[in-house]
Length: 336
Image 1 (cartoon, rainbow, N blue to C red):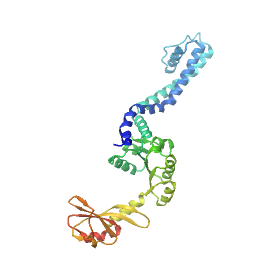
Image 2 (cartoon, rainbow, N blue to C red; image 1 turned 90 degrees about the vertical axis):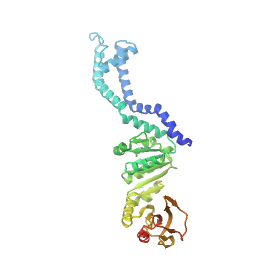
Image 3 (tube, rainbow, N blue to C red; image 1 turned 135 degrees about the horizontal axis):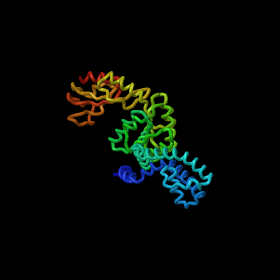
Image 4 (cartoon, helix red, strand yellow; image 1 turned 180 degrees about the vertical axis):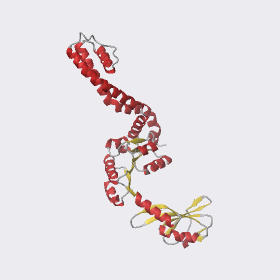
């Protein structure tokens, strides 16, 4: 196992046990800072008017904020200014403390908060992984295929549906258009990025920001409007897939032949596709139409790529061809 895969799969998983919680603490820093300031101000009142030491003053301040009331100076000896300050501070802090405690507890006990923190920490420390960015359902399929292939990846999506479907320590819920979320996904150290947003203009924006963070990164984008292909390539995309257009062509070709297996190259001028044919009548490969070429023969469960034009395919075998799908119907007739 190479060093990068060892780092991503084992070292990071060990380190995140200790490091990921600090990401959660960062989420509650503002609340803790405000609470500290409030305690300090109230403690300052007690130090100035009651002449308490700072430890006692902080203890008294916490009593005021929490309304526990374990410490209360003699109201008859309290100066009017102290009474006024404490009245205002108590009115302000009671509601503030209740809302802050609720927010703090909600943040700490929310399982999604910890999962998101863990995913962000992993993304920032992973190396040579693939970042999947977007809200399209194809992101789910791509993630599952990468998992089957054993490739390290991080998903960044703002779709709660996709997040719930893929939920794990490598899925980040956030707006892909925000640079800090792209950094959390590890774009700067990734080897490739797959971008598939709901809107082509958003895909373009994310592509530009990804290229800004990591210019050498290989970028694969999916667009709905075929006219966006040139624009995406200008923006830095290495591969642009016009999803709707390709799916439409595949549906059309599949309706013409049951042997259509998929498009391997598609452009506005020509189509190259793979066809798989069950041989029911033997023929020699030289009898195939000129628009297709044989690429393999399936014999006894094994692919045989070694043949010449005089080779004969026999009933029970399967023939793989590459070529113009408009000629597949003719091949079917020859073999049936």
